[in-house]
Length: 85
Image 1 (cartoon, rainbow, N blue to C red):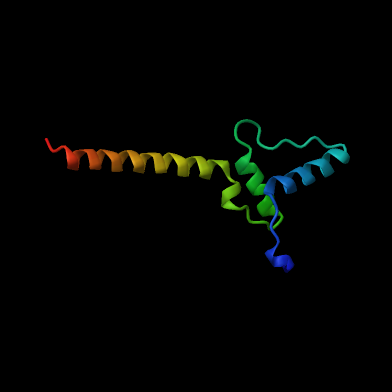
Image 2 (cartoon, one colour):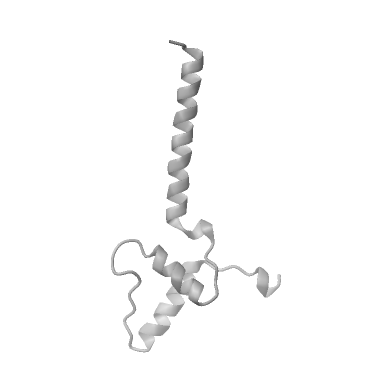
């Protein structure tokens, strides 16, 4: 595996950066409030790292919600086709 093929959990990198800053006496904060995902992604991008989509909980949740909507619509269409008005 070449170094271009290596992958890392993005939170491992964020943790490494925060530990380094804390060791320097700084007190980093990732996102003042709410979900730290967006600020973490910005931090990774600043280092030239493209965050993986599967590591983004917001995308995972949005995908789950969309799949639930599609399932419900499909079930409704099946019910209507087997039980016409």
